Length: 380
Image (tube, rainbow, N blue to C red; front, side, top):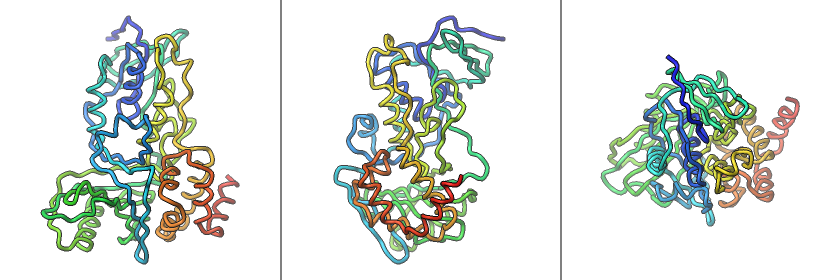
């Protein structure tokens, strides 16, 4: 049976994840009313979202929720190690559940509709939105924050992590280990990612870059071996597990129901899989206005991707090299870390970095290896 809602929403948001919730929060902060989030899932798996924080207003909602923050960042290989330090930038981590729950609790009058959108049609004055239950809604504006599907053959970042608690002080809580390559490289580009929330608690992730995810017990064996070798005296227990798959691609020109936002609008950083701070900046730049009811969506800027056009090209070239020469990955990441200062590195990773930082980063990489990748990319 078809049920038609007679009232017209100011805006409907398809998808209730990071981008959808943030958009609703910013719209309501700007005075918009009659909003709805269309998301069929009541709960989502908890993950740690990490990001570089430059103190901007776009990241304010997440800042006080951080489970940890670090100004020292380590890169380690079998033969060397580099520690870089941020002065203006801080690396922070936030629980996805904590952030999403905070935003939901601060939405004053946003409808949460637990149904799946089947289709949306643009009419003269509004959108007609059909749900799987047969209900039909109408909205003046429509935002699409759904995550794109993962396609076969895409280069992936896949991982499994444990949050562990040690009986005694074990971890250096001042330093985040972004990449430790002193692990098996048999299944792809593999490193351990370690975020110490304090001296006894940490997230320890086994992360692989390749086209094929691995069985859970493979990652768990890597974490077990790493902890026993690097922290032989520590007695730890697992308090939480998380896992995920992130396509390392730059999404563009995807079909969307209305205006795309978030990863669907290119917020994901292809070379690293980072997206949280890029989504926050994108939504803030679009909706940091007042009097939305009068302005409407015609006055907003389109969603900006997670990085500049030049940085996107650099990402594609870098991924080309990683896929064709995976054995070079540890050395390449170490070269980047040693060839650029901490703030310039963080600025590049956040996106829309400065020209000098991009130049120094490119200068730190082997010319011959990257020249062939540039030529191949130019021929596509």
